[in-house]
Image (tube, rainbow over all chains, first blue to last red; front, side, top):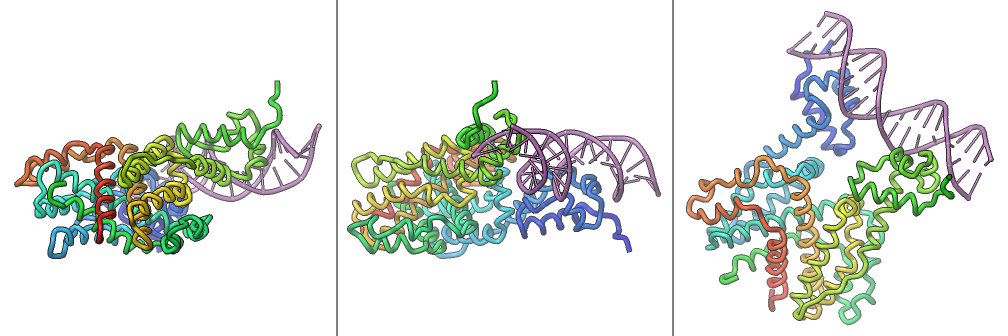
Length: 207
Length: 207
DNA sequence: ACCTGAACACCGTTCAAGT
DNA sequence: ACCTGAACACCGTTCAAGT
């Protein structure tokens, strides 16, 4: 009942599964071999070594981020929709995205989104260097936000917790502010609010 | 010519040196022991194990981020100055900051900055929940920007490079835009521009 | 209280040998 | 062309033993 010969694609699939579940640290050549029912060394024949196996997974992830369709009536709305799509896609593949990030391929992964942003910013009337600045500012903000957000989620047991950090004494004249800082942030809301605020300012006439 | 007895502080110093130079991956218990001229196992007596050694380094970094003094005449200027100080501090300790980030302690590290932001946002007239949102939006943007920026620097050999990604055909009606996208971004400028744009919008009356 | 070497269970990788 | 086991050089960690 032996498998037909092992395939590079099979190796990648099994590896992707391990990484999706428990992150790259959980991907061991020996564990992977056990999963596939082969000798460790066969894997080397198909993918070279661990590093290039991970590279191949990253490459696949970058390709998967291809298509995206903005929606909304105004350029500002459509830009927000692009940001939201990015957010959703990234949140579905946290480990793999982190690996893309580590390999410095974030930019290439975001090219489709970047092109959509260029289109919208142009439609909003921005031109030349100012349009390029706006696209980059939005792109940095979106990606940056997601990196921060992901970090927060990964470590739910902050010490000290936010509410310990913000006792009312910290903002003596505005207890409502202190209370608001002590409450956990709603990332979805904060994300939309931030992108909207930045976009409003960038698309403003003059500048 | 034997050393006087080994010290926890000595272990931390030597470890910090290794990490500052080549990142946490370069910190090996055996290498560290060699550096200190002791047996590997002595280190365990002083710091427990590798993980808690790294934790201790991170703790020290968090403490070092303590003081910061905003400057400038308007709240908006002072907020920008806080963001700039953060940027400078973080750029001086890239590896350690990444470790703080990995351990989910970014928030605690940023508490002093957060408090400064609360002060300025309050001075600008914002109150309650709206002030809290503004503080968080600025904080997320600043930290996020730095994470993205750091990632770019760490991997200068993007493939394909930005200028290959942006040939003039990509933005048919605005060659100036295409040229601007093909040029490398100036992070310092983009950072100031982004923070200013976001702050302007957040501090605006109404909202 | 502090340090030591030996040993254990894990890695990634190479290589000569098989079919 | 594909797979194998043995071996190598590295890890972090534990432990009984020293002083």
